[in-house]
Amino acid sequence: MEPLRSQPMTTHARPAPARLRPAGALSLLTWPALDASGADAAVTARCGGVSSGPYATLNLSLTVGDDPARVLENRRRLAAAFGARPADFVFARQVHGAGVRIVGDADRGSGAFGLDDAIADTDALVTATPGVVLAILTADCVPIVLHDPVAGVLACVHAGWRGTVARVCAAAVAAMASLGSRPPDVIAGLGPAAAPDRYQVGPDVHQAVTRAFGPSAAAFIRPDPATPGRWLLDLWAANRHVLAEAGVPDAQIHVVGLPTGPTEPAGHAQFFSDRAARPCGRLALVARLRRRPVTVDAVVTPDPELDVERRPRFHRPRPGPLDTRPVVGMQLPRPAIAELLALGDPGVLDPLTAQIVALAFRRARPHQLRKLLQQRP
Image (tube, rainbow, N blue to C red):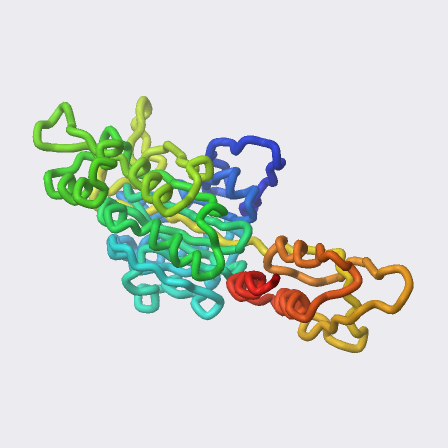
């Protein structure tokens, strides 16, 4: 199978709509805006797996009654199509709440091969670690990916009506902020969910939504004209509202507009829908941060006898032309680190700036660098 690869987008181009594209035998839905931002993110269609019956064919859940061996084979195929290993994935035990968990290298493989070690009571996974694959399972609820390309922080969110009312997206944005993210820098992708004209709810959901959102709820819940006493809920619009409340710019929220369940006129379902058929399988939203080496033109002269990736040395250059050769082989976690070197006197690195760059060379977490940046005069 050919692994999923992101296609870069020029800085002046408008983001293209999400699209389904083949990845070997699988079909993956991707967002060009996220491809361009430095994250690999995709939603699985239901083709390309080995499950049968109501789970045909790419069911990725171990909790819906499918043969576990087939589910694990489906996950292996997804990992191959995504250019990853099954042991790179992190799955959660989703509970339709607002629980968020920050994960890293130590959590790789959680829930990937069984339920016992899945991340418990969690509906949003957050990471700042490149290569860790976050996985969320849905079938009518909204799968949501959030990426801050400046801070290098990623989240995957499961938002049904309960999670939407609990503002799980806002909780994920807040957890990202603890790692140095800023809401205005976040790019959001909302995946396939129940169609707004088919997601009928009762008085209990109507009451919960109107209590949570007040007058704003009228924008995404309305009476069903065909059924008195019932309402139609637009989960996409509701979660767009939650993200906007949390500070994510509306222009950076990308909704696929592809529903789960049967679609007209063919009546064929590209994505599993729990409302259309029970039992049924689950699609997966999978996402990871891309590793991006950054070369910086810096007035830095490391000691050639020192392991510069562990402990670079900074000092004033000797008199004569400045040494502005690229620092070869340094992989910085944030392109913005280059801005640290645009100092008034390019021949001097003040002690605090030297400490920041040294942390960057040691692959420090973005929130550590941000705190140091805030201390600079």
